[in-house]
Image (cartoon, rainbow, N blue to C red):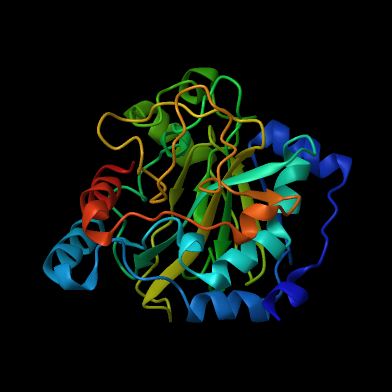
Length: 303
């Protein structure tokens, strides 16, 4: 039923595509039916750290002022799998990446609590490290940020601040994603774009777009702001070795046999547009225990 109701094509015009290329991001309104967003919110995934390690989960969440779900939700949730394979988002991603096939690297839910600025999500960063399992020289990374609640950026915050590539200085735009200089941070704060969102709106941005979470103010009726994020690359992207020791599981708990330079034609990185046989592929998933440290590393160090 979810799949049937979510097949609502969204066609972007040439002006929208040009704006995305120039700015590094694009807000598209009403992409996902509200009822589907509410269903995803109701069934949002478990935390990155298993329940039986509760004290660590609490400590990480408290220290980072963030709530981070297990990644690659689609691999263990039929609901999220149906959303990515049959829903409208990957088709929009394809239009923003030259109309070619699209593969999903991973998906994750982020939450930020009311009244506290997130330690890492609230700092200026790019998502480039989220895509370092593919050869960045030949593949473009693109994130789809889907708020699971309505967000009033002016009155209560909780949105995303964006560094428009057309106004950010070349020096700041070229700075490493994990080392935003203070001068660049001040510039980004001064020129940042921020938008309010209704459930169903989607923010698309590139892997080189500066952004940070806006604090959810104390006057917000929400205790937490949750958003679903999908990470996408072109269908012909090639696998690259990630950080030492976690290159096989980082950002994806699915076990695969890819080696550096291989096309990422694996069910672990499924082709979601056009829909493919990856939708029903049998996956080899690692255990929760083997992923605790991978997920904790990602939560603590923004990987």
